[in-house]
Image 1 (spheres, rainbow, N blue to C red):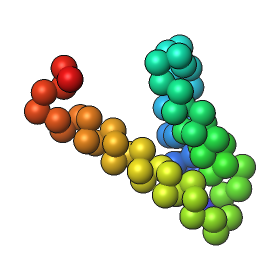
Image 2 (tube, one colour):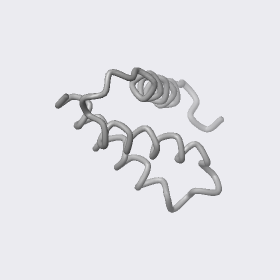
Image 3 (cartoon, one colour):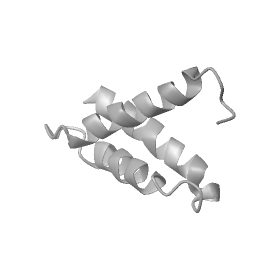
Length: 71
């Protein structure tokens, strides 16, 4: 339960930080929905928000580890 609450806070904070560039990052909606889902239902056994969190974290890791971040 606590892990879902912590992940929900982190995910929602990430989405809130990206609101300023919404036109360039429309995937923010998915982050916000999953973050709020994790916060609203911390005792839920649904795996969808956890898998989305994992996928987005993997994408962010890929972008951070690319040798040429310029494109």
